[in-house]
Length: 161
Image (cartoon, rainbow, N blue to C red; front, side, top):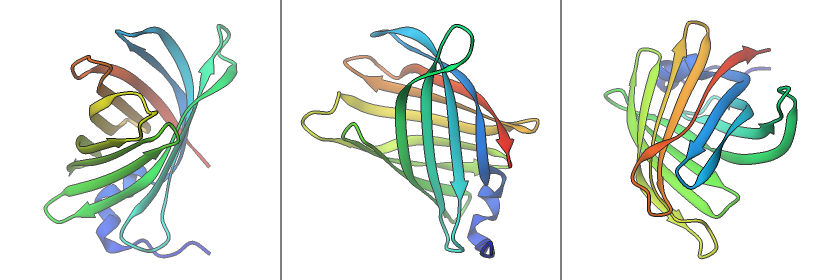
């Protein structure tokens, strides 16, 4: 039985569900690539969303290749259309984002990036999520490896199930 949506989640309700699709990635320090992605936003009746994302490299024909990034976290709405997001990566990086929700669009900027000694140097991030018609589009700019905030990833995903 699906729990009742906590009223604080109403501004983020458009994100709920599982989304799948494809995107593109690149950065000054790496080759450009195409990836497949699955994002899930769920809830348990409390005032936060549970978030998970998995990506895979796409081959020339669009088939799934080797696994790429995984991230999990929580999206917590705050008063005045604000949102806090915590993300954990198995590569040793933890990010805290703060941002705003307006209609069916979320804009987030890192407040804190913490990393283990073995993690790559990531110093800042900027993310945008929003509906493009029925699809979920998102983009991620990253400051890492001595580079300033630069476009890194973007995708357009369709709701499944």
